[in-house]
Length: 288
Image (cartoon, rainbow, N blue to C red; front, side):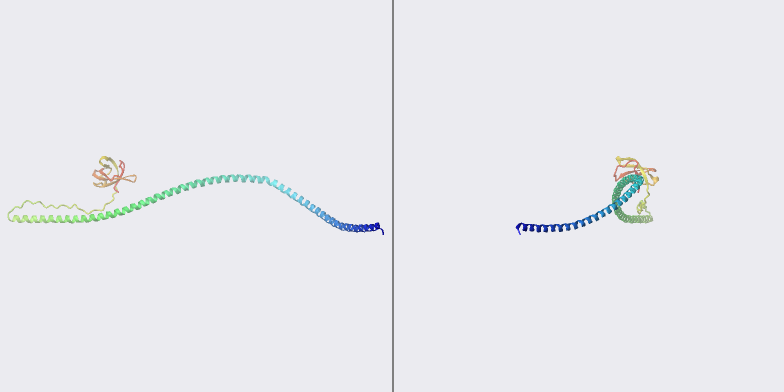
């Protein structure tokens, strides 16, 4: 065989092999295309069914939306009225809140003022209470001193009374001896010298009587500041006596004391003592 023939045979063989490969490839690819076509056809049908279902759903949704819009349009006037009413109520509520806030502010100010007043009153009460305790303590001390003085005075008065009694007894004894002497001298015809009559001195000592609060009250009628003298509107007809002491006050404040020196029926004159403030005509006087 010639070389050309051999070459042709080889080429034919190679071409056959290539052709077989092409055919085999085509057959394989043709089978895949069919499966793809089937899958695409199935997907198209499914998509069409889905589209139809979506169209039905869209129609139903549109109908429901139209119905909801219609209902909303029907309800809109009532809702607008309710909104207006609620707006008015909100405005009134805000006004009430402002009024209540103002009342609360005023009440807080009043409460603070009341608390301040209560605190001040408490301090005044504590001060007055402390002063009262001090006054009561002074009163107790003065009462104790008065009792001691009264006791000493009673003892001294008792001694004076005893001495006065002894003096009277001595005077009586002297008078008796004088009488016996006169009788004795007359027996012998003698005239006794004139003797001084034994006069019993009346006892001026009396037991102190408890002081009674007679509660006299009057006014200052006239003043002589230069000589520390004052005239009051009470006299003997009211039970005023010499050396009686009156307390002068003005608006519950102590001014001075007045010790009575001269007493008339409807007036008395006394000297000013313990002057704390200048007395004035019209100031009150009292024994208690």
